[in-house]
Image 1 (cartoon, rainbow, N blue to C red):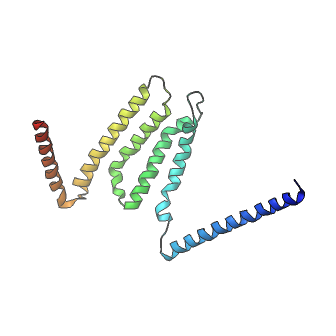
Image 2 (tube, rainbow, N blue to C red; image 1 turned 180 degrees about the vertical axis):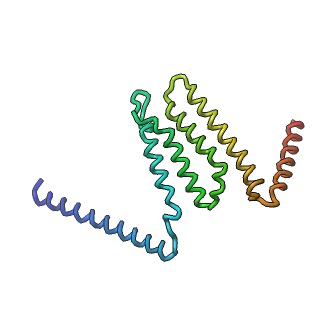
Image 3 (spheres, helix red, strand yellow; image 1 turned 120 degrees about the horizontal axis):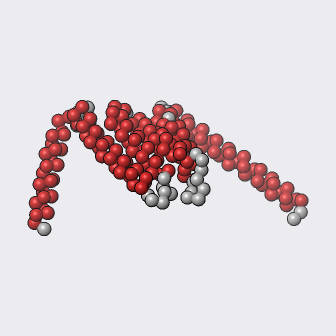
Length: 184
């Protein structure tokens, strides 16, 4: 290969990189300009992503571990799962602006800890620890559902006068379901 063709290849590569960078800067600038003109503040919605990133970094060593090669930092899967769940909860609660639901959402953080424990011991030969983790997660999710119903219907009265109608509807559904099972 001649020196001239090598020089042309180097020049060709050097002009491509600045043009991609310039295009990226133009697109990013236009996006930020549109957000400013529309009065949209991204950090109002995206701040929980920092917490999600921290949780992801904590879970990463357990994710990269295998049955043969356990990482020394794999134990961080349990607190990492809790931090990840907290980030998801904060993101969702921030979107709907219903932070009072943390009165019962704490059970999901415990469930995430149980899930992290199960993930940490996924290579356990007996599977006993994983089964205990699954039972704990199921219990916490059921507790979450019960507390959510209690707090939203009775304490916060989110549905107002409509929740008795929902209870009547549930009763009718159960009667119809029972009648169908008797005829079959």
